[in-house]
Image (cartoon, rainbow, N blue to C red):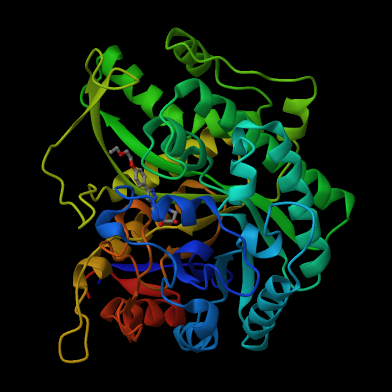
Length: 449
Ligand SMILES: CCOCCOc1ccc(-c2cn(C[C@@H]3NC[C@@H](O)[C@H]3O)nn2)cc1
């Protein structure tokens, strides 16, 4: 027996996001988001998929909540569609949008499930993008106003708030690499956006504090672990730069009040400079109540001049891969969490996303996704290792509760523990659902079963 046991007070949950599950993209007063625009732009999303219907959780959330209740989760992480609340990003509020989220949160609470609300999960109102989007500092204040309205509306019901999901994806993946909305490929633009997104986080925290709100607030960066191919300094430095792209760049400003010098210098060599205004770093670095961490993958890297932005190449050393073609690297989960503790201290941490893409289908009413179960076992074992290392883990939320719209991959990549037929929208619990349910109920699992 190799039993992995977790604290009785650890929270267990699952996560989704508005654009990926809701659908009703143009219903009940919702304004267009940049993902509505992007997904309707030919060539941007695999198979021309879009979130017009998604998995129709806008109309089916009561069924989904019953699936959550049966699963036995404590906490459900969802996101609010900003343009469903403010169709043009600012100004007039869409009452039907507010009502939808009140009805949804009330149903969660009525079923004993704690809501964890992400305010920004990538679906920027298109009207704000038309005025420059996150590159325009005015968007920062628009976000703070949206956040304040949400705090005032839901403060008594929602006690866990996440400002920004994966700021690296919002800035660099979407505006330098360019595969996510709005699809720019400009390092200086992405650098400016990364600062504005952190500033938006900080301003939302300030509004939260000013209202003397009950509960806590944080943000949810995504991280990976890159193990140097050798102990040669050039390999170590290349991996640290690549990890610094996702981690240090977005953690140092919040936890240390400044950007990491080694990254600032590297970006300057690449022609990208920061435009920081007086007071910005004080706003960004005010204390948060918890840190969300999203981890999926890692790997091995080594120095290679001009191989990528950081002179680093990834080496395939034969690790198994998911159906997203990502290496399965549970050791990296432990290593990155240990590094966070060592470098940033013991801020309470929720794993706000961890899961795997496997495209198993329904056969005779069952989905045999044993590979996902093995992924979850391996990563929960790494989580336990991190807890024994002293990392202040408060909860684990798997990505995702349901198969959904996986951004540029459309409906081609399945992360859910519940299968969704994207034509009929029928939900089918996968084997991993039943395994996760038992693990939550026990508070432990056996590595060998
Ligand atoms: C061709 C070059 O490519 C460079 C890296 O390209 C990617 C693409 C995708 C990701 C990515 C996707 N996810 C899962 C989501 N997290 C939030 C939630 O909405 C999930 O759907 N995390 N990271 C990272 C990097």
